[in-house]
Image 1 (tube, rainbow, N blue to C red):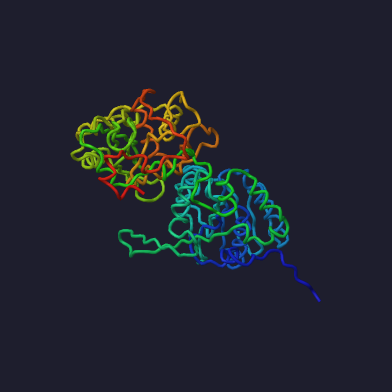
Image 2: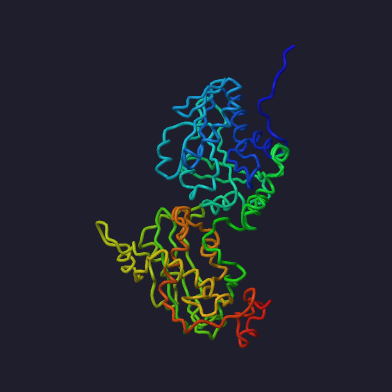
Length: 484
């Protein structure tokens, strides 16, 4: 009597949900230790067994060497099943003829290497390591089958990393608890409207019972790995606080005010603009008012009260408007506001075989001023404004009211300050591969307003000013609804 050994089977719960999921696009994971790689391996086993020679997959990480551990794990699973591995080509051939490659993917250019390829399964391991959705999105065009196999893309990841913002925006925010099928209607001229479905399947360490049994100290290891926010992200799958965010000083409670606060800005207040150019990627335009200390904010504080973010709504995807159209849009948004100047991305002043973008703006009646583009000193000034501390603070350890505020009708600025990651190779700079356009625009605005130390507001011993602290007595009766 022969016995049959089980080489691999999914654990009950999220892993089983993944390998049986018929949805085209799946994001799987959300916490460390949730069995994400095992889930992808199991999904491929099921897919290649069902479709045989019609199954053709590719497994991506951002760098080739990051795949070593994944390949080692597949050797212990695929080898006993009779699959053959070509190490030179990093390709498995499964018993029924399906093929699975292991490749790296970093930039748009890397994705272009796969144009003309046909795959029935694409796996993106640790999606939050990818600063942009753009190269991944290009791979959607490779998903096709001449033999009728069901195609799909499977992504895994944890909170944090340079891609935290776009992953959260695409998969987590629409359905934080997961298991809700999201439908995108795709309209192409000459074709009937089509629907593409995606879903988030959350998986946490508590779902990985094998890990808990074999390595019971794993949770304790995670719990001592770093800050409270890091532990919450890794252990509980908390996406609310980005791990590795650059502006750790930023807080919605401390720096964001209701849009109705704009009614307090007097017509005589000094106003100016800031602008970061983008075509294929988003552009960002902000409008600011400088407080003289008489309308509720500290003297010299900057308030971003209006913005225009040139995005399609997809991560890091611009509107592709030409310069005159953007200039006219800015002019329309300025309206009757009297902006003293607009500090702009220095790249708009470059000529490349014709008029510069700044010259095209000027033709439309929008005049730009070259902004200071010193990155690290500029980021330092933004942090100082967020802290309310500038230069050599004479009272270290005490807390000052911030000198930078944003109205809640400026979501691009808020999301940018909250989520833009630090550069892993240079932590003193933001990751330029991430969606950094709004924070660049903020940097241009902040560095355009030089500060005098004598103008610092007084420091207080406090856990942080409340919204009431930001209003003078004379303003409290005018907007009582803002005082909580």
